[in-house]
Length: 482
Image 1 (cartoon, rainbow, N blue to C red):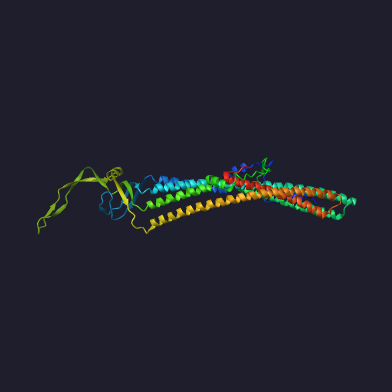
Image 2 (cartoon, rainbow, N blue to C red; image 1 turned 30 degrees about the vertical axis):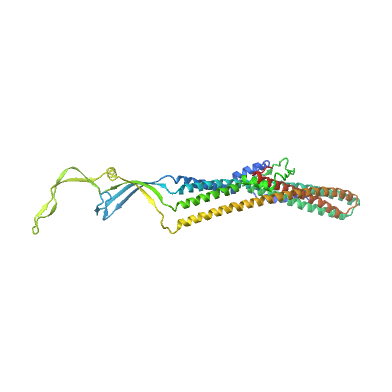
């Protein structure tokens, strides 16, 4: 049996699903480097950053809404048939071209601080989005710490598995010699070969778990799966941290968390935002005062002006004299001049008009819409307050649970260490007895398996304990160090 080919089979199988990228050596990643890379590249964090940018944009828009509204326009049209000349207000029946310029402005003078409260609400919402982004980054740090420790645990299990395979191989080689010398039956050799096969299978599983743990980390980092990756093992990571039950008591950690937890701060900001939104909705129930101003001017192709010397005299009938006479009375003779369309600049100047005014808007009846908005805003205040209370209660529950888990993980680790020491001692005695023929292979393999299991349990308990303690410290300090 080729142990090396069995051990490397799962890694080769996994690499078949990716296009390999040439690299001279694997890059070493520390925990802090993983965190920094994830903050810059993780897709979930990018979504949180977009939410914050949207909240900032909403705040900016609400702030700019205090500026006056200014609008300008230019229009032009061709008229055919009877219409009103905008420059003379007379009816005409001539085809004509009209154009005009207009500029209008309006500004809210007083609206019961509706806009100011809306600005304040969006400002609190922007603060909340900032804290939510901070929470997402902190949560990413926790997830990376867990994944980082999972990689270290998987690598530790691979090392234990490799040691176990090497030990089983050495025992098999020694058993073959004893069988050849006639000291032990051939069944012992068969038992040891079966044990070696089982240990090799366990090693393959451990190597596969290590590869999957690396892929999980790469997914968190949004790192190309073909990029080489290896962890930078901290110097003191194998040293179990000390759990200070006084500094990490649940109530002490909870009090510290209320001052540092971004989620709790975000919930507080959302309560403030809801209160300001309610005030803004109430302001819309009262009258508002607005200043309006504008200017406009027109041009018409039908607007004519006289020029040059008279070309003739015109008289028009003005009526008749008496009841029964046909004597016509004529108007005074008037000179006839040549006509041309008044220039665009002159018409714009001659028809230029301005206005300024105040508008008082009094809401009387609008389908009860505004009062419904106030009711919705009031409900939102209650909802945000309940969210704050629920998250606060959950935070306390999580901290108490984390403390209980840390204490339990410490006890489990201490028990695992004791079990490993006892199993090692039992294995040493069994090895001596097996080598002199005082123990059969089945009993010996059982002792060896117990030691292997104790080593795996001790490694798992250690890394589980490290994570539980770091999680408790995270609730207290909002940071994790490895």
